[in-house]
Length: 459
Image (tube, rainbow, N blue to C red; front, side, top):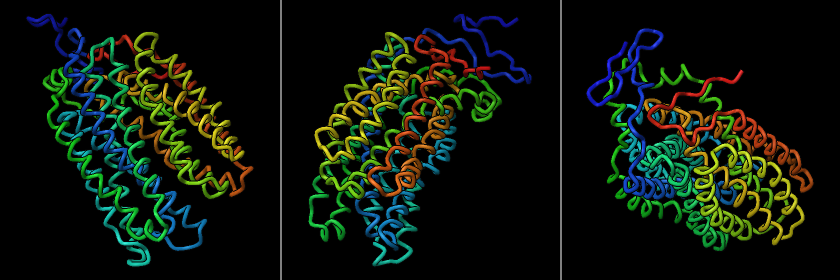
């Protein structure tokens, strides 16, 4: 029998293989610190804004610019190559999740989140300095791909790490609310990148393709400076410090792999995030190059929908603190499955008002409800010692699917305005998978973080 220590906490229990670990050590009262939670949320918001400003400008440039200046071949093959380059970052994301997540579980969330900032900010600035295919030949796309892969490694550790940091600092009854700010930052980054590209896209084409496209990439240095100054001042969560001081002989990744069902379930729950890349990449390409809607109109649609998404995501997080994570995520996922059909139908009809309404309902509404809940829901699936790694890897498995979904959707569309249905069915099916995975998952919104066990497989 184990004897409690002086403060009433039981020592680590022996595992089945005889090793001692703090993985399932009962936690102290997990109330959190509101002041620390606010600081962590602010840092996560600004860091996420930088990460996804950088990601957003690459995303838009892939659809509007890189297919014309970075790749050889006809318009169709260059566009496919450009979109494949965008998708390649999603191959690097799992590597970032494994490496950065493992380091974050061993040495601290804060340190690794500073690294993700520097990786993303540096690679984005360098993209703005690249030569074009006309100037450097094959070296141009090779360098672009290399820097894109660095962006992917950074992104693989950013949202998961920010979510873990904020949720571990948050009071138990407000983890959903504070966790939503980890995903509000990326949405703000997309809004900022879209606003910048509205001005850039309005330039004469020769100016845009010569130097205008570079300005948004260079401007990322300003966001990097602010985010770095804020992020370096935050502290490690108490629950992590406590677990890190406890003895264990098993590496976090090995502990996680023993509980792989939780990681796979998270990946299935997160499949609804495919909506984001389908709308942002395939939707923009489809609308501007196949249907003939203006790029400025589609960027304005993206800005409006994402501005609305920020309060809706916060609402989703707050609602999940009251009624649970699962109901809000299921409503959001099923709403996305239905809404994607309306979005593509509106684009095909070439009715700008309908496109705005469909985007607001599907992405600004239903998608954002689910999106605002997942930071807290996914973080709560794992124990402290493997929380960063488990959240990051599970999320990036789903993002690997999301990253290549636009390429698949473009192939399914066949270049004709009436062939959007297969792409919508693909997206709706993945959203349905999310809903089923969430429905069969365990509710976590009242689970103390210090005692969370990975979820077993459902038979």
